[in-house]
Length: 289
Length: 262
Image (cartoon, rainbow over all chains, first blue to last red; front, side, top):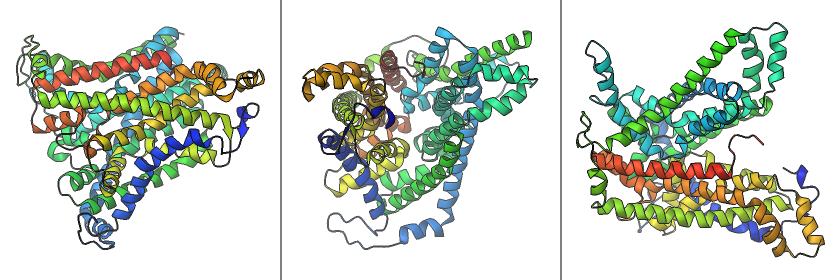
């Protein structure tokens, strides 16, 4: 951003401070201090509230490492994140390609807007809408039985596939958006050059289009993977009893079991894992960009 | 050439399938809010009773008002503070600026589950506790980075020479901002504000951890209802929410281009 500021910009932090301070103070109080407090609390035996006894401990972290339940659930959540991300690539990438390279003009604008519109609507409501579709005796069940000559029972509700479907539905617009932005930047003449030099469609796709759109794919994957690993509402509503994941266990510590220090430790471990994965993805992203 | 045409039509058909995947559940959910059966049974029988009975549901109504109030206050505060910060980041060159810009990403990138539980712990620790004040504090913090990113994007298209010209013609700092810069970035400010409203109005996770039984927002109330066992009343209120937020986003799109095309 620094380049275009050369002419009109002014030096010094002092004149900028009054404009910056309110926003950054607010972020400090509501985001950065809470995150630090969470780390602090995760090393406590109990909350230092209402005269309760507390001491420093590593017990909350020991709980994570000694009980295989937590690491199993973390792995399950990571796997869920991976699967949802892959499905989003499979479903979203071709759509982004069609939007960027096949559709033109007004119809492209309109359809692009239609694709990204749902993800600005309430995520909870969209997950709830899948409950309408997937239930036994729900729409999918009724519709398929009306069309098919034999009787089948579709009861996907409260199953792992239901969680996947709901999450892909929630997050696929991210993938379409980020891939569309990078695909659109690819010059059409590059593709034509490849074709006229004798490359097949598949070769152009593999050697030109996919490498050039890699930044979009990775950005989309990061935007999807991170929140999915921490999801708890979607597995709860669509997964029922099979919907126990790392996120739902953290939720339980805060709203049901009231073991906040353990919840804080589990949250912090999740944050660390997510940050490590993002840090690993960052150089790939920079190289590709 | 014909293969190209066939592939293009296949592509169009695929987009149609994707749109069906995205919209069908929402449409079905909305249709069910007009179906008479409380157990979602077909055949479909038209009714608007579920919307009528919403008016008797005091809990939902008070949660709705809370949601609207918090979204409006969040919009005002975060648009004001965010636009100020964007101006400073645009106008001044100082050490640590890159760091300040990087600080905007944790609130967007860290899963809300983590941010929300961290806020719960901290607000309890310093005595704010749970409730509408805590929810508002959280929502503004979540909306701020979006506002700053959107307004900064608009500022990128602003020629700094215009500010210089105004200054050299004798305008003071306030006049420069008010008469030159603000009118130019207004579409960005409005888009940022609409983003902020949507972030707050649709926010569930953070509100969920920060709410208490009397002081809650609409999405939290809906989540509780879904888990207790729901009636088409929930479909009715969900339909209203989805129509409102989609209308808001269409409005935002008028002020701010997402497509990346200049």
